[in-house]
Amino acid sequence: MKDSPATPLPHKSHAHAQVELKISCTDLPNLDYISKTDPQVILLSKDQRTQKWSNTPHATEVIKNNLDPKFVKGIVVDYFFEELQKYRFIVVNVNDKQNQDWRDQEFIGQFDCDLGSILGSPGGKIKGRLISPKHRGKKRGFIIITAEEVSSSRREAKLQFRAHNVGKGGLFETKTNLFFTISRINEDKTFSPVYESIDVTSTSPLWPAFTIRESTLCNGDPNRTIMFQVHQRKKNDTSSIQGQYSLTLREIMTGNRRFTLQSPSGDTKKNAYIEILQAQIEEPPTFLDYIIGGMRVNLAVAIDFTTSNGDPRSLKSLHYACGTKDNDYQKAIRNVGSILESYDHNRKFPVSYKLALTTLRFRRQFSIIGINRRYTGLVPEVEGVGGILAAYLKTIKSVELYGPTCFSPVIEQTINEIEEKLKTGDINGVITDMEDTIRAIIKASALPLSIVIVGVGNADFTAMNILDSDDHPLMQASNNKKGQPLKSQRDIVQFIALRDFQSKTTQHHLPRAVLEEIPGQFMSYMKKNNIKPSPPAYVKAEELLVSSKFDVKGLDESPPYYSD
Image (cartoon, rainbow, N blue to C red; front, side):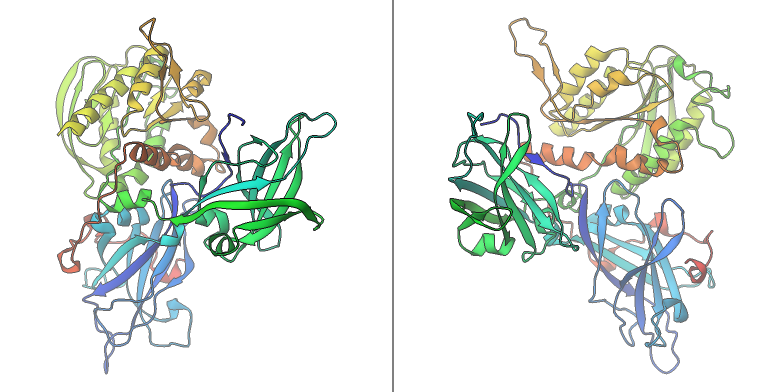
């Protein structure tokens, strides 16, 4: 049996899911003279590249004569952890049911928020104040939105197959290395591969059981055709199809446990068949189960205040900040932080800091860490990414840049804080303490921690890729001569160079490159430690507080009538 693991082909990761939004409103104004308001909610989305609002195909039903409607029809949207998904919920009074354009109905109010903030609120539920650009200051009622993951996007199929009488070695083939692939049919009747097994050396191979998301296997449709193909691996690493069969997930689950293989031309392969040894559907915990169950994503930001950045007063400095244009550090904090702050619903961060080699620390959630001159002080509580950026600007005006870029103290400090909690990253320049850093990362791999390194500037970051061990575990020789080599328990590091995301085409991909791996890293820790998610917090609608982050008194955008 080949020693390599099965190869999962591209599919939705833990960062992606489908979410249903259930909507209700309270205290809507009565805009009808004879009867009461007939409300409906329409969903708009904001394009992060163009920063323009656009219509979506999503809307609730119309409820007649009701100022406190609870809509039956939910809105299902795709969820991407690594994206800032901004939505506008438009509430209208429907006077003309024959007119499908919501802009021709009577406008009641709107509520803008991002999907991450809804999911990150207690119980996945948020309450917002409806605002009308034409009726500023007037009460327009409230909207309550509850998010729940769609179960079909979380189901997994656990399968195991054995082949019989398949393949034989040719004139120069001494082994029969067989593997199988599964492909699903597309709308244009072509097939796309979704899974590839390991090689097994046998004419009747028994492949290990594997798990695949139902959404990946058949896009949630149990009647969708999938193609099972057995391939023989040649010495030159080419392969040939030894047999295939088309069927559906429903047939795998409920039908015959054997199916006869056919050649690609449609002829039956003599005595060659596939046996289904295991087929079951499971609903394991998902990343969103932990989020809605109260798990917070705590962010620690480490900023390089070393001399390699240049004097902040100089135009050539990586820390130079003047006017409205962000420097690269500000870009990284704003792009990544604006997404992660959604998963801490109060966004209030008490700050204490002490610069004495390694710490300017936002004690509970954020850390700005600089290697600097000794300094001790106190900063008032900050709020969200704006507070972090303000603290950063204040810091670069008052610190003295010093020393080489040492990364291991940052990781060690974070490790100590996490270990303490269990008991009761943006860097410029090339890391100069690589061995210490590797040792610290290996130690951190046993904790619920992900490390993101954003390389700022034009330095040679080749060595950084050693830390981003996607394909092979990070390893280091033991300090003890007789001891086993140190080995990372899981991949927890993601490195990107900011210079690769500076063009108009690529700059919007920065958050995805930085954050997409984090949910998978988180889930690997939870699975390894057998930690189950907490049940969602139960919050009564009447006890919900209005989300202050989105409760703005005025709007700096055009009225929704002109937001096409």
